Amino acid sequence: MNGEVVAVRDAYGQTRAALEIIRGALEEAGAGLEHVVRTRLYVTDIGQWEDIGRAHGEVFGAIRPVTTMVQVAALIDPRHLVEIEAEALVE
Image (tube, rainbow, N blue to C red):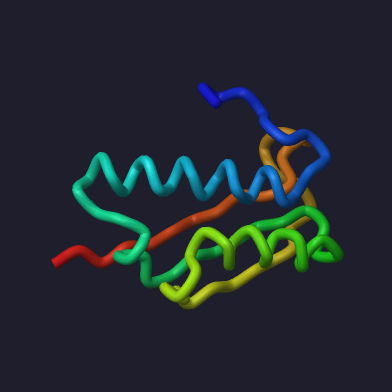
């Protein structure tokens, strides 16, 4: 990914890519997706909630972090459809 926009015009693909970046960051910190307690998804088109939610559910499976999805007017790059924040609790 290296800072390049992936899955242009594909909210599902961008969600999967963002979550893989999050997974990698967690692993570098010695944690995993099971440590995520909350995610916030900022989307430019709430009408794509099903595809975005499906990707989120596929990645997290039974983990079930508290999740909020909010539509925003725009993200930093007009090709971005989804931005995700994740909070993890590691004891």
